Amino acid sequence: MAKIGYARVSTHDQNLDLQIAALKEAGCERIFTEKASGAKADRPELAAALDYMREGDVLVVWRLDRLGRSMQHLIATVNGLRERGIGFTSIHESIDTTTSVGKLIFGIFSSLAEFERDLIVDRTRAGLVAAKERGSKAGRKAKLTPAQVKIAREQYAAEVSVQQIADLFGVSRATVYRELAKVAA
Image (cartoon, rainbow, N blue to C red; front, side, top):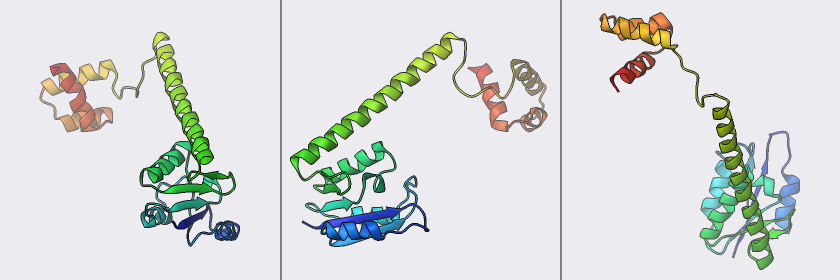
């Protein structure tokens, strides 16, 4: 079992020393470091650390926010580790998924994140229903008014090119074709 550390700071002005010292003290054999925003999906050193690890290893971070961009991302990452037989430890929050208590705590985090996602879905659905009841339509506003569509159809029937119709209304040819196809449907 090898402990592999991952340390990250968001900007090049920040210093990794505190994290690296904590990871060394935790017994990490190898430490991957990165200076990148947590919001970035592309974090090559994290990817390298995850690729380097083998079954039985433990990924160690100084704090949870060093690993995940969001709670959902953090949970997905840790669950991916678990599926590969790799443990996870966060020093600051004292979470260690190689122990029963650590698994329980992380399970609670996972349940809370799932509950939060469900609440967001429920609120979104309720908001769409309420908007529909108020007469609002979901989606993007039409690029052409019904009157403009009528003119476009007449122009097309008179053999005016689709490009000329698009130029007339300041829209793309795809928009004109889409509106003309609605007639045929």
